[in-house]
Amino acid sequence: MKNIKFIFVALFASLTFVACDSDDDTDDVMPPTEPTFTGTYVQEDIMGRPGITTVFGGTDMVKNNFNTSVVSARESFQPIFESTLEAYHDVYGTALGVELDYEANILGLDAPTFTTVLAQFDALQVAPEGETIYFNPTTGLALTGRKLSDDVIDVSLTLMFGGNDGARFDGTGGTPQLTSDGVDSGSRTYSQGFPYLNAPNS
View 1: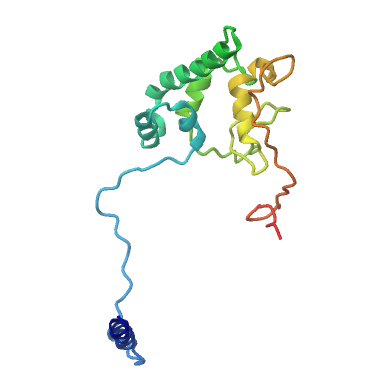
View 2: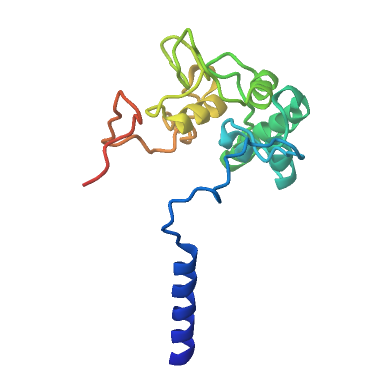
């Protein structure tokens, strides 16, 4: 076994030395080539909000189809998303022993409109002339992007279960807590400059 290891090391060393060239001669250097974009390219995923299809897609096939679709061709997903949204309310209603239907949310979006927004406008948003925010309760501005400090899970749950005042199922008055995951940002603070991240733990 030791002989095999020695032969391997010797062979590797010889290859290493053979590959090295101390000659300054550049005759053998290949000139840089321009990139080529020939061939067939296939979209693997979208740059949007990953949680949308995770929460509303249902089956793996729907999720995969959504992730490989283009924004302008997503109207077929809206009924699936709406059905899933209503199904979540059915499940919680059954658990509570009451009839529980989706109620227009704090943005004033009923189920068809809300799920249309989710399906057809799930793309990276930029607000060049305005605030970049996931949701601002003061201005009502929503989905123009996100800040690192935005609690996107709580906002998403509120849009799904909060009703028109955002407090429909917020854990008060005997209601279940469906508008928050109970996790806040803790002691994190984010810098104002790139990369805008919280300082690492020491």
